[in-house]
Amino acid sequence: MSSSISPPGVVLFAHGARDPAWAAPFERLRALTQAAMPAADVRLAFLELMQPDLPTAVAQQVAAGAQRITVIPVFLGQGGHVRRDLPQLLEQLRQAHPQLTLATVPAVGEDEAVLQAIAAYCVGAAGA
Image 1: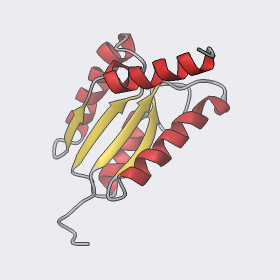
Image 2: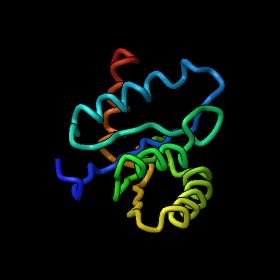
Image 3: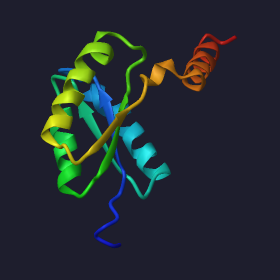
C-alpha cells in the first residue's frame, strides 16, 4: 500500500459502563463492522468508565496514518451525550488534529432500518 493512501478510520462511540461484560455486544459490532469494511480501521471508543476514550482512539488512528475518521455514536437516541458531549469532544479533537477530516453521523438508533430491526426483534421476543 502506498504511504499516501491511508485507510479510512471509523470509531464506534458508545457510553461505557462499570461492568466489563457490558462492552461485549459493542466488541461484536466492531468486529462485524470491520469484517464488512476490511480496508477501514474500525475501533471502539467510550464516553466514560471504559477505555479507550474517544481522544485516545482518534490519536491511535491518526498515528496509524488516518486522514479521515467518521465517529458513529452507538446510542439509541440523540440524548445529551450525543447533542452536547460529543460535539465538545469533536471540537477538541479538531483543534488537536487540524490536518484530520473528522465527521460524525446521527446516533445509530435514529436510523429507520435500525429501529425496524429492533422492532422485529421485540415482536419475535414477544412471541407474536
